[in-house]
Structure formats: C-alpha cells, structure tokens
Length: 170
Ligand SMILES: CC(C)(COP(=O)(O)OP(=O)(O)OC[C@H]1O[C@@H](n2cnc3c(N)ncnc32)[C@H](O)[C@@H]1OP(=O)(O)O)[C@@H](O)C(=O)NCCC(=O)NCCS
View 1: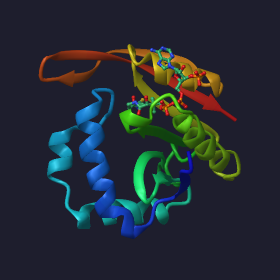
View 2: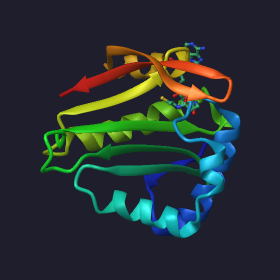
View 3: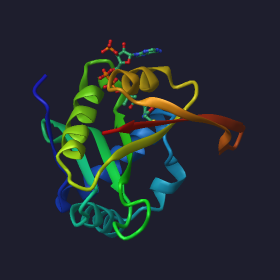
View 4: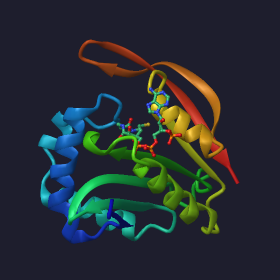
C-alpha cells in the first residue's frame, strides 16, 4: 500500500476533523469522543495543529493514502519549564479498514524516532484501556512497560473502563 507518513500541516485541519469523526464512531478505545469532535471547528483544529508544530517536544503525524488521512499519531509534550518537561504522551489511531496492516506500527516507529532524537524527551508515556489488546501488544513490542493500573480511569455513558499506564524510558 502506497501511503505516506508526514508531519501534519495547517491545511490538513478540515480532513483531520473528518478523520476524527470517522474513528470516534469506529472505536471506543480513544480518549476523544464523537461528541467532542462534533464541536470542533476548522479554526480550533488549526490552533491545535499550530501548537504541535511550534512545540519543542510535540509532534503530530498523519498517514495519508491518496491524500486521504487513514491514520494519525502524536506526542504531546509538557512545558519545558515544568518538572514534567522530560515526559511526552503518545497517542495513535488508524481507520478500521486499515487495521493490522502495519500502519500503527510505522506511525509509532516514526514518533519514537522523533523522541529519540529530541534532546529534551526522556520518557514516552501513554494510557491504554486494559482490554485494548492490539494496542497493548503493539506498545510492548516497542519496549513500553506497564507502570501502573488505574481502575475506573475512563467513564462512559454505560460504565467505567480501567487503564494500563505504560512508559518507555530512554
Ligand atoms: C491500536 C491501533 C492503532 C493499531 O493499528 P494497526 O495499524 O492495526 O497496527 P499494526 O497493524 O501495526 O499492528 C497491530 C498488531 O496488533 C496485533 N493484534 C491485533 N489484534 C490483536 C488482539 N486482539 N490481541 C493481540 N494482538 C492483536 C496484530 O497481530 C498486530 O501485530 P503483528 O504485526 O505482530 O501481527 C488500531 O487498532 C486503532 O486505531 N485502534 C483504535 C484506536 C486505539 O485503540 N488507539 C490506541 C489508543 S491507546
């Protein structure tokens, strides 16, 4: 498959919202909901993209197939003057039609290459729903280790979900 993975650009804002609308309908394993996406304007998304592209420790990548976004990944950094400046949080998603084709792995690989080469980043962390086995196995393959279990971390309309906290330390 001839997809490309690239840094997100301001002009991707509209397509990114469309992408988020799709994946929030397809998966319950995300930290963003379809309700949140419904309220997101192109201007809001442009501001988010801009903040990623002007942060010394954050990056957002999109995977595109024929100019359509089919996956995304991000590292979100903290203020470097805070005591959490050495940590970034990882997120990744792929459209359901393209699962299990290695795209998630390639996005994470690109994010970790960025992290390894960034002078400030020492720890990449994430939280994953405890029954999201595909994501957990993917993270473990990159060397992420479980550092905690957080009961009732997520609250949904129909109940709660537990999270496994994972980290990769360079
Ligand atoms: C998690 C996600 C990003 C993975 O993307 P992907 O492109 O399908 O990932 P890959 O194809 O690179 O790898 C998937 C791996 O999970 C494995 N896998 C799939 N289902 C699995 C399951 N039920 N149990 C264990 N492993 C599983 C696959 O075998 C594959 O490993 P392999 O390459 O060694 O065979 C994708 O499923 C997704 O977007 N899910 C919804 C959003 C989400 O959960 N994001 C993570 C939030 S923390």
